[in-house]
Length: 246
Image (tube, rainbow, N blue to C red; front, side, top):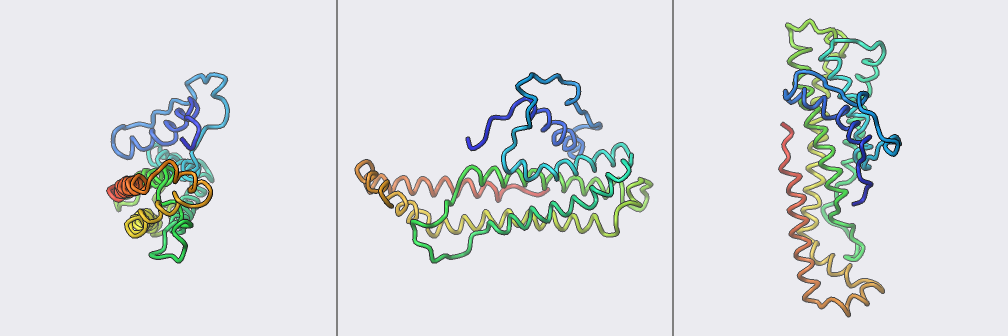
């Protein structure tokens, strides 16, 4: 695994930041059932929570979404906190989308096969699915806002606090970010189909390590490995494409 194992602190933080609010948004619960403050942590679990890099990137967005659910459920304005959340949520989402757009692979490259980048790694899946989970929850949050806050009959206090077209603009940003993730997956699928097997074969035979591997792996073995790698990578990336926003 590329990351440390989650501990008790991680599980409690994950529950109170993500599980509680998503259960409400997906209408699996009627109340926000926090438990973190009621559980006594063992001494070894008092250190900073153990996040994957993808989780750390999404942490602020989850916290802001959780704040929004509290505002909608409890109808309490925590002074300047709502103003900060209104400003931060679309900014963080926009930054996430730009970061994903930079990960798209070009349609073709002039690199040598042995210099082509890794076409698949578990960190790629972790990054995509972490963001997709967040975007699906944000989409539910937007539905909740439209139903409980901004509809013409609503008397919710947040209705007067939200800037004009804020919900519509957030909805657009969520959809664009979702498409950016799918574009990354498609770009790697296309690259794997075009150069996958040839790249693996070239990289296995490259350099001093490649020379040593010649004594261990025949050309037939390498060809078999390359085909299996490509098949597995394609199935993994195509799994990302199957995740729906709604």
